[in-house]
Length: 165
Image 1 (tube, one colour):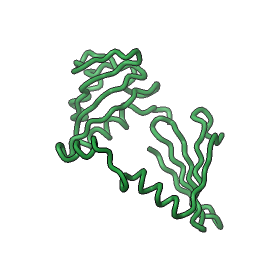
Image 2 (cartoon, one colour):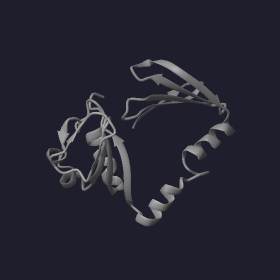
Image 3 (cartoon, rainbow, N blue to C red):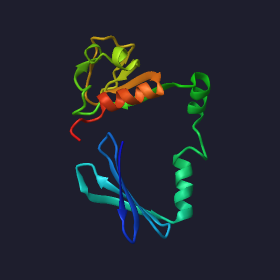
């Protein structure tokens, strides 16, 4: 995720967030404590398609919810307790990413990133369990990956996010 921060003199601060899925959010934190959140059209980052605002208390409550302070999904609790730093995550192959239409072997996923692709779910609901090095990763495949948290994060940022930004 890319985050850009800028001062708004006399108003507060503005944070622009761009996810690796090309989703853009802008958050304006007013000096008064009010927060405004804007969600943008995926194809036109200048066009806000929805917005909402929160007072200081509401914003802090929302942050606690999103940050997992008020509820931690049981599946995550169990995985973290059992595996500590091991992570199993699901990611979608995006058009324009380095992984799109490449084989697992050619990308050297195990060698370069020390992670494993343990399954692939194709758009047509076909499931590939324990894919081999010759398996092609296709656009919109959902790839299930296991590895250490940092290694998974590095691999996803390098291979699965669009490169045109």
